[in-house]
Length: 142
Image (tube, rainbow, N blue to C red; front, side, top):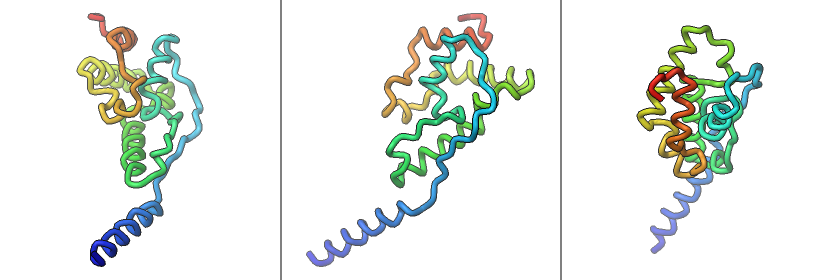
């Protein structure tokens, strides 16, 4: 029984200790706004901006390790892949590539991530949302 107490004490100490591992939860300044139809902006803000903009809403669990590590990693990776806060400075060729990637991710149901949707049910894309986004990206079939 004493051994179990030491194990639990060690686990508790580890749980407290990992809280001190630094995690970057930043929102760089937004210097330009994405220009898109209002319906598109509403969908993007609801379903995409937390990971794909500099306007991330950092939830309470983004401050608790080990969840904080995964959340911060997803946000920083999402911004590297596509950042709507820097969209206006992309040249037309890069915007076209981004549109193609958005079309692919949205039409195949890869975005938003399932792990994100577990907690953010309102971020789910309806068929109508998908249609609006695909039309915006230039998909003639929508």
